[in-house]
Length: 434
Picture 1 (cartoon, rainbow, N blue to C red):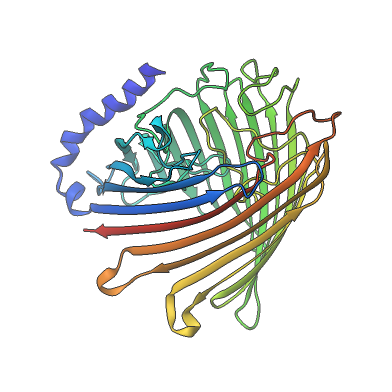
Picture 2 (cartoon, rainbow, N blue to C red):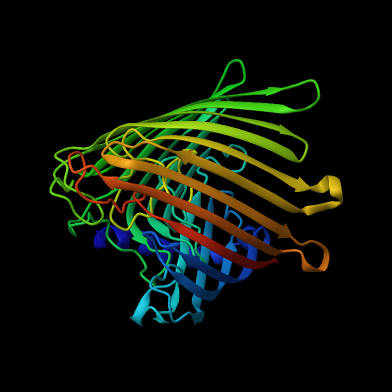
């Protein structure tokens, strides 16, 4: 693992001086500075969940170059983060990590991105793109988490090729930088501390006849977990310029070798093997600044809640991935969503989005019920304050249920586990580009 990381950093070190001397590299570049403050007030409302009272801030500088000789570019980003206040009753910390106590967190200082970009065929044919190094990655079944004041990121390599009717892509990940520590690139490990050599992702996006789009992807962390995904979506434009979007999604995750913890580890109970599947139907109606959506997601087999390595925060391309996952065995979620911008009222910078999701059955529980209400109100300034973004998230996630003593003998605390979490989060981000 360390040898592979040395190759990534060595390639960056050798390339940087040459690239920096090229005019296009600088002339076509973009630099930005972001300052952020987040305040989170959260409690479990007499259930099982964290109590948080944290006020943190961060500054992040990012440089994205142009292409040297139309073929090689460089992205760099560095950040610092620290606390402004952590309340005395808080028992959990999430934007930072504890030092001597929850109330005394470590600060963060690190490179969040150091990534070489290549377009081997030059500016006249940009369909093929390659990349190597550390960055915030996002594919269908794996994405580095960006919900905290600083993002998680990964070290690895990427290949993307776009063609007339779609694209294909490949990613290999070999190191991970958590969102809440200064760690540069940790080895991938399972919950027993055994090293996972890599996570590989292979996928394609296709544009099919009749205005149908498809996404197929397979992801596998070596000897640990494999996951496959397929989706079909179709959009319609109506006579009144309204749009309807429909989609179907399917996913399956299974154990993939000797590193899978069959005896249980971390938040997961023992299971001799793992095989979980989900199906989803969804639709969205939008007209002008307004939209309404509805989704039904059903989980079969085991709980759909496994992650690709122990530090992975988890990503699920499903409407059932809400504040927490509606993904227990036999759980069926129904979700209604809606939102609007306030452009018709003369405030285009203001928008509101909300959803309500519920389920009332899951294998191995008595009296199971899960509900979630979430609202996000946000305002993006323009004019002299362009780049300033304020947001308020309010969520009430409630889960009830007791193990039946047969299928389950204890409460799970996985991403789809039994948890109650009420939260108010205030986000302030100010980004200046030059």
